[in-house]
Length: 370
Length: 105
Image 1 (cartoon, rainbow over the protein chains, first blue to last red):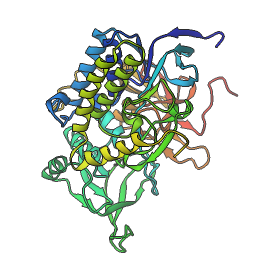
Image 2 (cartoon, rainbow over the protein chains, first blue to last red):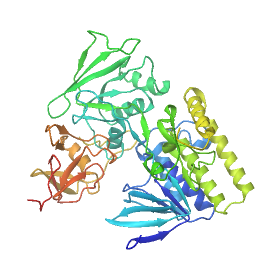
Image 3 (cartoon, chains in turn orange, red):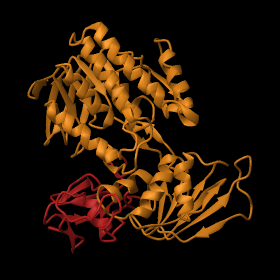
Image 4 (cartoon, helix red, strand yellow):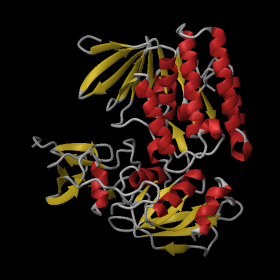
């Protein structure tokens, strides 16, 4: 590592989103030194674009809007003097738990005893003719534009996908002043919560089930979209094509965990479709198959910000325990409370499936790629 | 178009305190906002054209991952406009293909 700046910390947390900040708070609260590293200019991950109220119980801050939860996390990290390094993309993890990152054009090495990877997830793309035209974008990208940067990505929008992201962002686009022409969903039923779907239906936005996009048309940007109906075998229904005049197409077809750093570290993986694809195997403490390397949040399976924060707290508490900052009994008590809260979040028609997928992942044997 | 009034977030009172030059034209912007936001606010959505087929590209992921929104900024090609903050006086150019450095022949 000759010539590079070398810093040290007990716990390095990669990602300053809900999982990473919650993890750092637990380490700091136990008296550990912790450094959070994030490539973005501002901390908070995707919390600051979530202007809707969260679900869950009071412990999960249900009824509080996402960006307020983000502000609370930032206050806590400041009060606990957590070091948060921004504008610092991590480019390498070395076996001795050194984190390589770049700041201000310079390489820096951060030597840690434990690493928590909380890199989050990225939106899935959807390929169709015209999908590369300007005006076709991720629903999350549109959400960032309206709620964080206060800019409308277009005037008339087609939303693809009726999961919670598609439903919530449709409503938020309307709150920002856009016209949502329609929401289409390839499956025969709505993917997200009924309460979110009801809000946009009440606002007069049609939801076309068993419909998909055939192509987007336009010269230098989207001018219209051709959509079509799908039959019970997901095949196009001949003659069902309809043209919709829109200038923007938002894609909300799920997310994929950002696992590059866990692969780099040599963590064993499992393919769990219910969690978004390939995810690092981890135990109940969120520790991967590489001792001292933890994961938390969407990288360990795509869920919601509330579960991401609980996973972060678990990983942070387990790190503090491993460093001898918390006695085993005290750590067990703290973790038991978190596990109970997390299980409460993984209930209901959507949570049950995630709980099963997580239980499967945690129960996988160590040894080899699955 | 900017979202000035908002039922949850309230009014946006930030001032357009900066100007960037986009393909020779002045575009009003806010210091610190991503270049892509300033462009979208001005109705500019085509950020570059691809090397082989010359097809247009614009903002896609908005979080710096997909690199579809890259442009030439102050002579440096392949700058991710969705995560690069505006500075007053920036020169932003629609990028053709892989772009060229300002000092490249």
